[in-house]
Length: 126
Picture 1 (cartoon, rainbow, N blue to C red):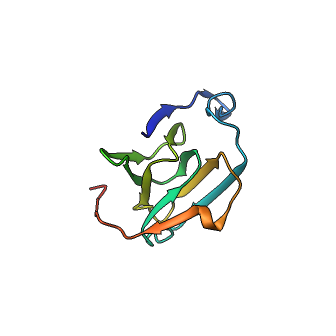
Picture 2 (cartoon, one colour; picture 1 turned 60 degrees about the horizontal axis):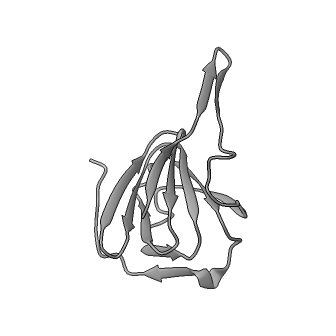
C-alpha cells in the first residue's frame, strides 16, 4: 500500500533545503526523473521494486492499485514523498507541462521488470 510522507524542509533567507537521507525506508540503487505531460500515457506500470516519488516541480496525479483498494495522490510540493510498494500497480498521470517527477528506486533498471498493462481508469486533477 502506498503512503505519503512529508520531507523535512529547512527554510531561511537563502531559500529552502529538503532532506531525503534517513527518510526513505530502503537502500536507493537508482535515481531518475521524468518530465513532460505525455511521458506516462502508455498505461499502468508495475515495478517489482520499492519506489519513492517526489514531484520537484509542477504537479502529478498518481493512482495506486493494491489489488483490493484504489488510492489517489496528488503530488504538488517538493517536500512530499510518495512511497510505492512493489506489489502494487500504479499510474503516474496528468503531469503538467512544467512537471519534474523524481523517482528513487530500490533496484537498478531492468527492462523486463517494467510491466505495461492496459489503463482501465481515467482520473483528473480538476
